[in-house]
Amino acid sequence: MRILITNDDGINAPGLEVLHEIATALAGADGEVWTVAPAFEQSGVAHCISFTRPMMISRMGERRYAAEGSPADCVLAALHDVMKDARPDLVLSGVNRGNNAAENALYSGTLGGAMEAALQGVPAIALSQYYGPDNRDLEDTFEPARQHGLDTLRRLLDRGVWTADDYGIFYNVNFPPVPGAMVKGLRVAPQGFRRDMGFGVQPHVAPSGRRFLWVTGAPQQQPTGEGTDADWNHQGYISVTPMRADLTAHDALEALKAIE
Image 1 (cartoon, rainbow, N blue to C red):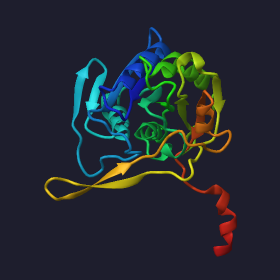
Image 2 (cartoon, rainbow, N blue to C red; image 1 turned 180 degrees about the vertical axis):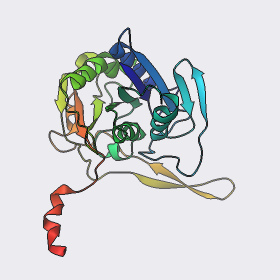
Image 3 (cartoon, rainbow, N blue to C red; image 1 turned 90 degrees about the horizontal axis):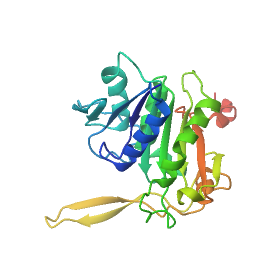
């Protein structure tokens, strides 16, 4: 198996090292693992692409490249340049430092990379590590992902739903905020929503007198709907959420016939 890995935390991020370890085991002795990842951190860029400017790409080592762009840019660079003569069988994005459950998924560059792969017709899975009081001080804060990542991917590849339609399915995997030995199992779950919270801005005046705005987040331990991704994560389970890039609100189409 030929696997491409990317992320949004940058090519030197420890989560990418964890993913390389997992991907190497998944690819097997005869497989290949290629890395095309952002030269710098790209958290929160979602599915953006560098449409109005070129990006520099540098070879960092054997099958290892850094691109000055987003995770989606990196996937494009891999598929249409670095690996154009031998496309990957699978794209893995992560392991993100922090969860991409609930509404975080909409902002995630980690998911953006997986989404672009799916749009290009390549099976893709995004992986993220949730943090909380039970695991943020571990010596290896990626312990749940490191210990359970390979089995999770094998289950998805063996028994997951993979489609070849225009908006093919890709997967969002979140490992829970607990030590590896306390992971209870895996649950398939819809995307949740944290109410009464969200991103905002905080003003700051620089010494020069210029006004800047810092984007602020919110506590990640807020409850979500029962049985959703973040809810299962809080209970100690790995969540697996099938996703598509199709943004159509299909449930509203029939009701809107009245305006035609």
